[in-house]
Image 1 (tube, helix red, strand yellow):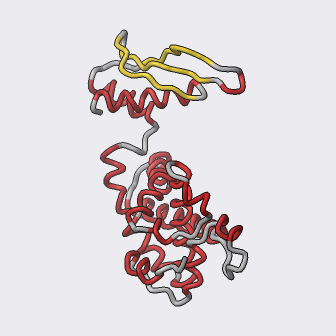
Image 2 (spheres, rainbow, N blue to C red; image 1 turned 30 degrees about the horizontal axis):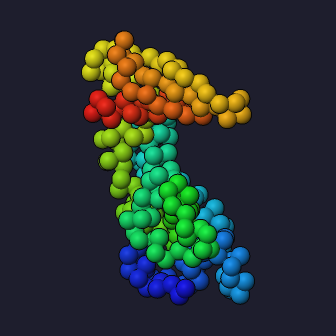
Image 3 (cartoon, one colour; image 1 turned 180 degrees about the vertical axis):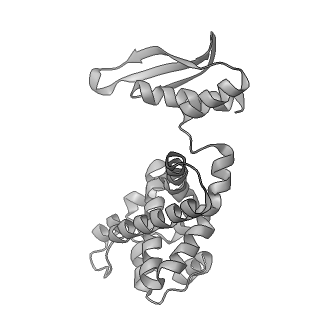
Length: 229
C-alpha cells in the first residue's frame, strides 16, 4: 500500500519536512511482520513522545485558563486525552484510511480499532513535534483536541458515571442513589455481576460487569440515559 501522505497533510494542515516521520507514525507494529522489507520503524516510540507532548500542552492550557482546583483540572485533562476522545479525533481527521497494519489488524473493529487510532494520533503528535517543534504541535493539539473542552464540560463526561448520576439525582430529585447486586454468576475467575441503581425503591437501570464496581458504573451510565440527565 502506498500512502497518499499529501492527502493527510492537507487534512491535518501540516506539511512535513521529513515525510518518513509521518509515515512511521502511521505504521502499526503488525505491518512490519507481514512486510519484512519495509524500511521504516513502527509508531510506538513516536506514540510515547506524542503522549508526553499532548499531556503537557493540555495541562499548560488548562492551568493558564482555569483557576479550578487540581482535582477538577486532572479530570478535565483525562477526558481530553483518553482513548475515546483521541480515537474520535483520529477518525474525524481521516487517519484510519492512511494506517499501515496487518491484514488481521485491518479486520479488527470496535475497541481494538479505537485503541489503534488513538495511538496513531499520539504518534502523529510526536512526529509533528520532531519535524516542526513545540509551537506547531501545540497549535495542532489546541485546534483538534482542546477544542472539545466545551463539550466535555457541558456533558460532564469528565465525571465518573456514578459521581455524575449521584450529582444529578441529588440536584433534581433530592435523593442519593443506591446500588444492589441483582445476580452473580460464573466461576471465581470469570464472574459476571448484574447491579441495579435505585432512587429509593425505584429501579432506574441495570448494568453488568466483571466486578461489582464495573457493573455499578454501567448501571449509572444507563441511568443517566434513562433519566435524560
